[in-house]
Amino acid sequence: MKKRIITISRQFGSGGHSIAKAAAERMGIAFYDNQLITEVARQSGLSEEFIRENEEYASHSNSFLYQLAMSTAGTYGYPSVYQKLYEAQTKVIQDIADKESCIIVGRCADYILRDREDCLHVFIHADNEHRAKRILEKYGATDKTVSQRIKDKDNRRRNYYRFHTDREWGVAANYNLALDSGVLGEELCVELICKAMEKDN
Image 1 (cartoon, rainbow, N blue to C red):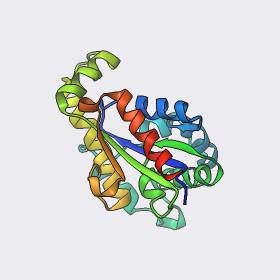
Image 2 (image 1 turned 90 degrees about the vertical axis):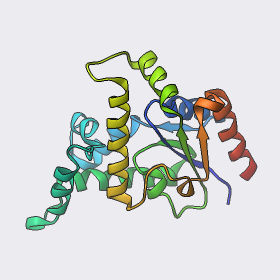
Image 3 (image 1 turned 60 degrees about the horizontal axis):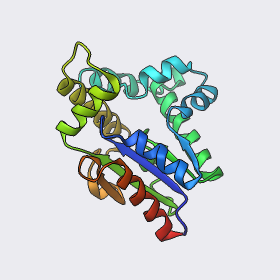
Image 4 (image 1 turned 180 degrees about the vertical axis):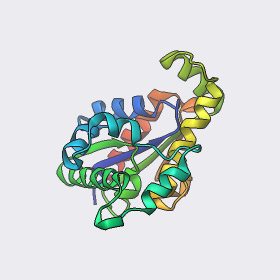
C-alpha cells in the first residue's frame, strides 16, 4: 500500500516541527500540529486553552497526579477530563488519516495509526549541545537553564507517551525512520523524509 501519512515524533529542540512543516510544503500535503487543537476542542467540548496547556500533562513532576486522574476514569460513569481529551485527540487523528495525505506531529500519532500500512513513522533527535543552541536561538533564555528545559520537556513527552501507549518514546524500533538533525541538518532530513515517501509511491 502506498504511504500517504507521515507521523513525526521529536525531541525538544531537534527541529522536528520545522522539518515536518517543510516536508509537508515540499510534498504539497496537509500539515497538522497546533492545528489539531481547534478540532479536538470542537469534538471534546474542552477549551483550546485547556488543551494547549494539558496535552502533555504527564510531566516528570506531576505524572502521579495525571495517572491518579486517569485511574478515576469511569467513576460515576464519566471519563476523566484527561481521558476525554486523549479520546477526542485519537478520533481527530484517525479521521484526518482517513481523509487526506498529511504530516501529523506528536500526540502519539505513530501509536494511534500503528496498524495502518499507509503510514511512515519518523523520529527526529539530536544531541543536547545542538538542541540547546537551537532552543536559545528560537525561544530565548528563561529562568530555567536550557538543560533543565530540555530535560523537563522530554520527560513530559516520554511519560505521556508511555502512559497512553505502554511503549517507550524514542525507541528506534517503534519508527520506520530515525534522523539525527544535528548531524544531518534540517534540509537533508526533509529530503530523506520525502525520498522515503517517494520510495513507496
